[in-house]
Length: 245
Length: 182
Image (cartoon, rainbow over all chains, first blue to last red; front, side, top):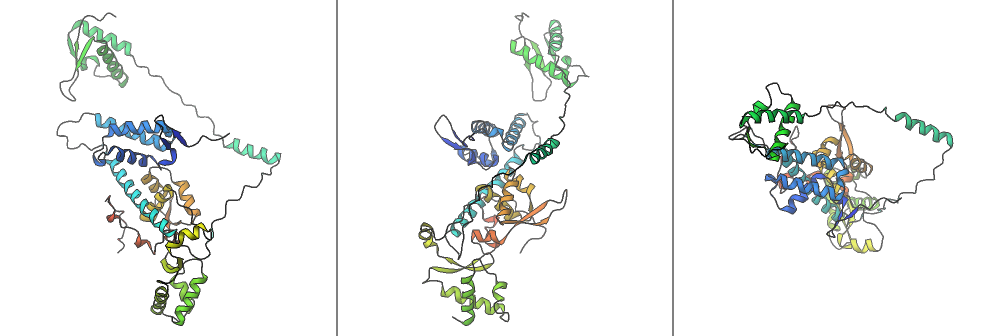
């Protein structure tokens, strides 16, 4: 069976080689230069989307190093989207560590260019008695008898770890219950606060259920959601009586 | 040329690798370093023009090398072959090891953003890097450094000839060694 060629042809006719990039940082730097964006003020959303598109097109999303970087980019993108309090001096740019690594890597790339030039110049000067390294000898034909083969198979089988069984405990969200509760509140009043939807002792599952229920109602147009300012409690208002269900 | 210069010329001609000052000194044990360097300079000047080869100071030693302008003809005639080029991954790893030595695999991985174990093994095989010591901390990791062979393939006299980090267009925190060399 032949292994697939490490060359992909994208629809626009460009040939992109998988080996073109020596790692996720190299690919990121490539995208940054191509987009001509400022590395110290990285438009993370744009770069993250492009990174994901490229690794998907190249099939690099199978490679752990690229996946890890993709996850990191998405996390930074999410952190950038979070609102921050005005005058918050404690805020640390979530991109800082990535930018530091990119700059460090860029420095290495510059050194690589220098080393490659030096090696090319050196390669143009021959010393005495230089011998090219001999080509790799073809592997000797395999000689093995049945007992060896069985012994080897036993060793391999011994290495197979016991399957590890994970127990996943279902904790379903109770969106139906939350919907019923909100409907009850809506029947009584025109507006009410988030605090009334989830009680003081709400678990994370309660909060998620209530939040999804609210989003669903807002999508249907039953309620409108408002937040006067970042981090203020949410205000839920009855929208129209055309809710049929 | 002086008798000592001719002796050095003969030895350098016979050798197929750079010879260090100590090695050259073993030819005439009673010779002082000053006289040896003067004689080496004599050979260098004698070959500085009018010859197809020149005396190069390389990898902490001296070696006769052909002049660059003849590379193509010699290569074409296949009297000698140019060495294989190093891959970008190998050069990246070499650059990090050269500047951060002694350095462990984890730090190389972190800077490159990819696993570098296989690349380091290749460099060890080609004797471009070597294990110089073991680090402190968990598992006492192997720490790598560059070899004279590394200087040889780059045509460098010593590590001082590498560009200083401050000279690069991307200025960044230099590695902070315990004691500043220089």
